[in-house]
Amino acid sequence: MASQRAGIALLFLTAWSQLVSAWPLNSPYVTINTRQQQLEDEYDYIIVGGGTSGLTVGDRLTEDGQSTVLVIEYGYFGTFPSSHYFLSSVDTGMNPKRMFNLTSQPCPELNNRQFSVGIGCVVGGSSSVNGQVFLRGTSDELDTWAELGNDPSSTWTWDGLLPYFKKGITLTPPDPAQAEEFNITYDAKYWGTESKIYATFGEGYLGGVMKVLYNAMRAMPNVNVPVDHGAGEAGLYWYTKSMDPQQYQRSYARTGHWDDVRRSNYEMIVGAKVNKILFDGDNASGVQWISRNDTNSQPVTVRARKEVILAAGTVHTPQVLMLSGIGPSNLLQQANIPVKVDLPGVGSNFQDHSYIPSIGYQWGTSPNMPVTNPGNGGGGPPSLAAMLGLPAVTPDGYEQLAAAFEAQDPTQYLPSSYDETLKEGYRQQHKVMSRLMRSNNVIFLEVMMFGAGGSVQNLHPMSRGTILIDPTNPEGDMIVDYRAATNPIDLDVMVENIKFMRRFMTTGELAQYNARETRPGTGVSSDEQLAQWARGQIIPSVFHPIGTCVKMPREWGGVVDEQLQVYGVNKLSIIDASIMPTIPGATTSMTVYAVAEKAADIIKERNA
Image (cartoon, rainbow, N blue to C red):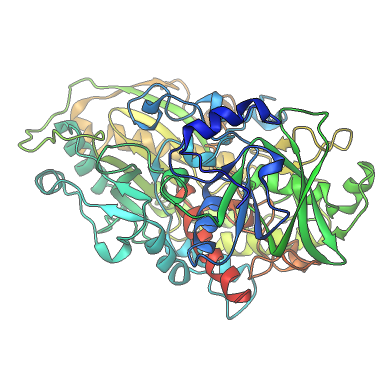
C-alpha cells in the first residue's frame, strides 16, 4: 500500500519536510495519508467526510478485508491535548478549534439576529464537539420517514432502525445502588453489546433535589415514564452520554470506528476539500479535491470502482452536489455551473431544534430529600430530562394548536425558492405533522432537569430553511438561512413550552417550595407578551441540522431514494443527517449512527 502507518512516529518525522501541506497527525493505530503521493489512483469506495456517518460506514465496508475505502476529510486529524476526550476538560465540547466558523443569515422573525452554525471540522465530525447527550427519539417520529418515502415496502421505520441502533451503540448500565435510589431504569433489549460507541449513564453524585424534580415531573398530567430512554417513547427518563465507561472519555466516531481499526484497506486523507464529483456518463466515477492549506495547489482526482458516498453533513453535502452540477438548476446557472441533474431539493427542507437558554427561577424554600446512594463514581452523574408531547405540554390547548396548524395553507410560509415539487413535499409533511401534533409520543418539548427552571426546546419546528451555495463564490462558505419562526406556529409552541415550565415550577408538588420567576418575570404574562419576549431569546439551532438532501420521492422534492441513491445518477449515495425528512425529537448523533449502520448494509448488499 502507498499509505504509511501513522503509529510509526519516526517515519512521519522524516516525511514531514516532504508534505504538500502541514496536516496534523495524532494516532498510534491508523492508516492516514498526508499527501497526494501516498494515495492510490483508485479505491472501491470513496467517502467524502470523516465524521459520524463517514467513519461508521468506512469501518463497516472494510470489515471483510477485501473492499478498499478512502475517506476524504476537510478537517484535521487533531493535535489536541490528550485530555480533550474527558468530560471535565476545558477543551472538550464546543471547541472552536475543531469547528467551522459559519454564521447564519439574519432571522427577521427573531429580531433580525444572526447565529453561529455549530458543526465539527475535524476527524470525527460533530460527534467530536457535541454535548454528548445521547438520545434517539420516538417510534412515531421515525415511522414518519417511511410514510414520507411513499413506499409500502419501506424499512425506514422504528422497527427497521432499531436493529441498527442496537448494532451501533453499546449500553453501559447505571450503578445498581444509585439506579434503585433514583429509579434509573433500562431494558437491555433496546441496546447492543458489540459496538465501541458507548452510551454511559455515569456514576457521579446525585443530590436529593433530583428526587424532588423527578417526582414532581412524573406527577404532571400525561407524563409517561418509559422503562428505557431508548424504547422509542416520549416521557420522563434518565439518559446516557456518549462516553467510554472505563476512562470516562468521549466516545465518538473516531474512537469507535477509526483509532483501533488496523486495516490496510481503510485509509484517510485530511485537510482536503472535495469540490467535484466525477462522472462517466451518469455513473459517479470518483472525486476531485484540493488542499485546504494551499489554495494554489492543483486539483487531485481519485477514482471509485464501486461508489462515491457523501457524508459531508447537512451543511456541506449540498455544496459538493451543487459544485458537481446536481441541485436547483436556476441557482446552478447563476453560479455558472453546468447542470448535471436538476434537483431542487438539494439545500432545502433544512431543519434544526430551537431553544430558549433560560426560563429562570429561584427557590424560596430549597427542596431536598435524603439520599443513601448518591453515587461516587466517575463520568459525572446520570442526567434527567422530560421529553414531552403536546398533550403533556398543554393538555387543554394541544388540540387547538394542532387544528390551527392543520388549517394553514401548507405553502404559505415556505421559502420563495421552493418549486412545485418542494411545495408538494411540504404538503405531505404538513399532513403528517398535523396528525402527530395530537400524539403524546411525538416530542415537542425537551427540558433538561437539574435545578430550578432551565432551558426549553422546541424539537419539531415547522418552519423550513435553506443551505445554499453563494452563486458569486460557490466554493466559499455556504449561505445558511434558518428562517426560524417564519411559520408562526413555532412561536405558539414555544409560548406553550414556557407556560408548561411555569406550571411545573409553581403548582403541584413543587408549589411548596415557593419558586420565584426571574426570567422572563411575571410582568410578561399574556401569550402576546411571551411571544414577543421569545423572539429576542430563541436560538434556532441546538447544532442538530438535518434534511437538506432528503429521502423522499423526487416528485416531492426528494434528493435520494429509499436506497439512499441520488436521483438522476448512478453509484452516488448519501449517508448523513441530510437525508432525514423530519427531525427526531432528540439529539441527532445516535440516529446518525443508526442511519450509517443501515446505509452500510444497503451499500454492501447492492455491491455484493
